[in-house]
Image 1: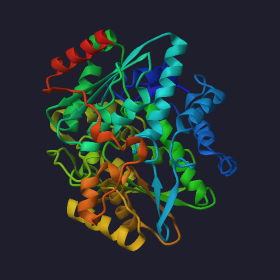
Image 2: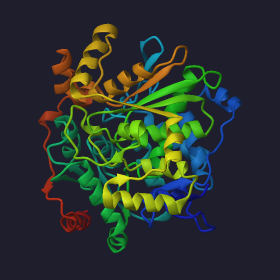
Image 3: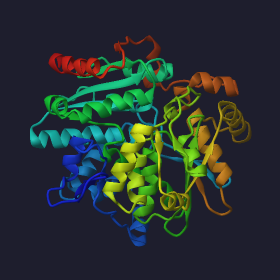
Image 4: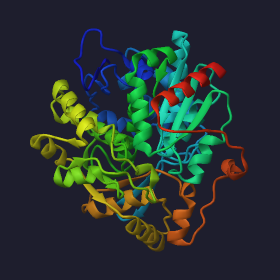
Length: 466
């Protein structure tokens, strides 16, 4: 399997999976995509019903690592990655009401769906770096959950230095402390003046600076790294199989910020999973819903909300879908994306927009509507959900069709957002035992402005200390 940039052509020298794992972002600023979508036959899907989650994950990921990492090696990694999740099913389904299910993706060490991919990513990095005798510096931006998941997956790993940028004052306290209380020498947390898009822009600028990128051996753990998407596809396949696929269609509803999670579901559909609809849930930062409804992909100011992991206006992974909607035309994709960065408005051709609407629905919930839905789901089903998962469930309920299971991605444990949950339901969700002392742990992080040069120097200093 070879990979191409959304802004470049596939050539005889195109990179393989291990190459793009370490690179993260393509040299031309585009995102890597597989040269083709592996196809999974209905019979293979039926055969996979009997597999454990780690074995299923290895099978799916192996379709993207062909020629780089073999199935047996992946199987060892997946069993190690998921052995400490606190539910035997790893990603269990919970029936909230008839034909509406919560796919619980928060049973990993940091209580968020990012663990599902990040625990694999840490092991993939270890394998490839050891094989190549290399070290890398991972730099990532987080709106709350990616950072803690990346830190937990990469802490203490000798070949990895990790720098995570988070928007100062814009994560929940639990999210912040999960990052800043990890004191391993290879971890640096930076609180940046600005919002998530500010942090993400700084990371992209670092990748665009080739001299800096080469100097510090830069790599990425954000979902701009294709390996993250590949490791998220298995849980959609697993959920669909549990509900009757491939002999029955299933729909998914995903609370969406950076578009990576729902993109993984879309990828599963391209591979042969019978998905009827994909539903995008937005909070007040509703650029994706506005685009679906009115073809309005225009950037507005990021506003803080009850669901801070979705407080994003520039959804990086949308470029991957755009590339596909443009029939994999890298020139058109590059032009549209560059104009978008300059003007704040994406001029998506009408035919491409209509093609997206054939598979996707979208809906926005205000903070008040999110709180009301949280109360309602608990009152009617005794299902306690965090604000992000609540948006997924509410949107799924809205677009649910008779006889077709709707699966909502439950992306975070309620205890990650205790203030919002308590205000809505009166309940005080407790952290699990391994995080019970989180608020007593020492914190360590740098608080910096949002100047690129300042952040780059902090990364260099961290490397020297490491």
